[in-house]
Image (cartoon, rainbow, N blue to C red; front, top):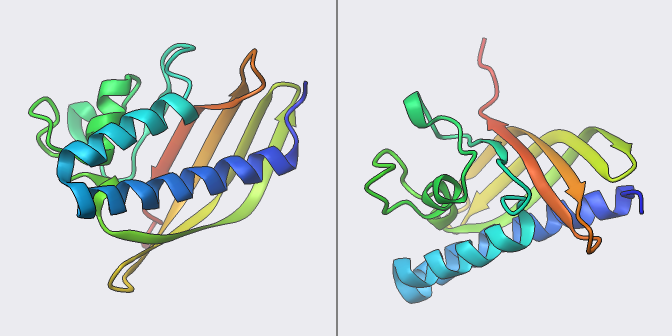
Length: 157
């Protein structure tokens, strides 16, 4: 079945809600709780079961800029991984609201792509806005899987 615009919207909302849940799990249960939830989120939302995911996180650099493996994605979201010592844990920064703003999307059958801005607000009211692109593949069960995720801070001329 082809992907719909509604499914793209629902996938972005689910991702944002999961990020908030990971932050709250960290605050309430520490790193073990956050890691367990983030692991479940990666299994539910990303296509690591389909192959490498083309993931370029916002705050990643050097040799470990790109995260084609689940291990690398988990380290990015929760930190605390000696193999990724620069990761501070993007998912444990106290997020309370995640809002996406669409620039454009493209759907061709069971593949869909989206790009736009995502604004994150933390528990202290601090706001971070990033440029983001997601690519999705609908799996055999009809679940959208993130197979491409690129995020960067806006260019400052």
